[in-house]
Length: 284
Image (cartoon, rainbow, N blue to C red; front, side, top):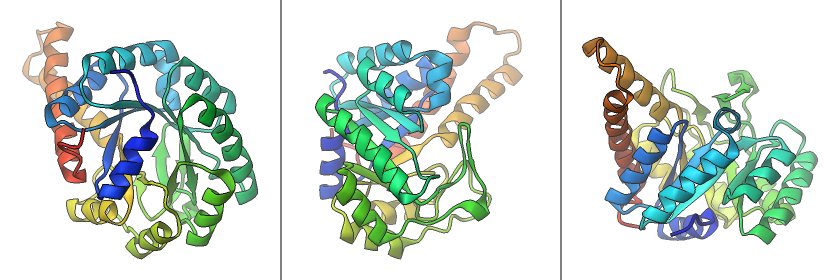
């Protein structure tokens, strides 16, 4: 199977009331682990990379690994560029084989966000690539994007309706009280806002800041229309902590095949748990 656009996957997920998990991966082992998890659980999968990871690994290496995984897999896999503000980089990723991109102009006024998103949507439509955009500002840290708690703003439901209408964007990430990174306390998700946004727009909604949200809150968000949940920090931390533990227990074992095998198992298990939580197991 080749890499697919995430648009039909997410449309189906919203229609059927489950969520697809998008995992930010930073190494080949992380990518392999979440693909193994998707294959074992029969779940559709979105592989995600930040701009920082694109710079670290290179577009062609990422696309090559994702395409190799997809060819060997029997479940649908999409490749998504997360939180990108650079139009030229978005074009490069789409041309190289990314099947989904996020144009993040949420830090700019509504009109500028509309203008830039529309520009990306027009190109992406011709290439059968999904586009995601953000309204409001999700707090926390995502790669090089820092949004202080007091600067985070929630998405306005009526603006969401207008935005989708004006841009034709196929997926929308509204800020609804989640944050990037690990939560210091209980996340303050505005469920009434999700419900109102979902009643005004029929496109799949995206839940950013999915690391560490309590189970009941995830399930409620998905039931209200969040068809995609992003998981980044939690997965990255689990991967790194497993390596720390391995070296503390096996200081003499310097074979990457030993410690990466352990890390892959940890990431795979976490990925399966997130897929079960969002209800996409068996939906491939």
